[in-house]
Length: 118
Image (cartoon, rainbow, N blue to C red; front, side, top):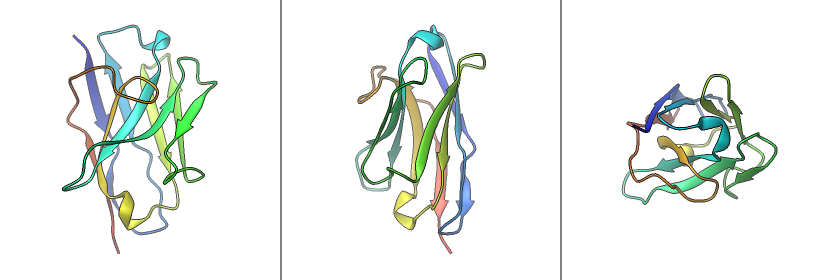
């Protein structure tokens, strides 16, 4: 059974940093592209970043390009999202899923809340 367990969110001031992680299980992690998504209150879930199975290709939303970095550790079945220079508009629940530019699995984890506020 495919599972995603996101963690590492929190409350941070504008300009701060966070590094959420997503532990995945139930599939051959090292062969699959992975991606991060976020959903803010009252808005649809949107793609934040994607990474190839070996980490040599990445993809970012324009709104986070240059501030966020996606990475993965295939030995730990985990994907990370280093978030720097955080802005209030980055406030959302962050999720991971299989895929590069769109989610390929129709079930989601519980997500991790990121709140950027002074």
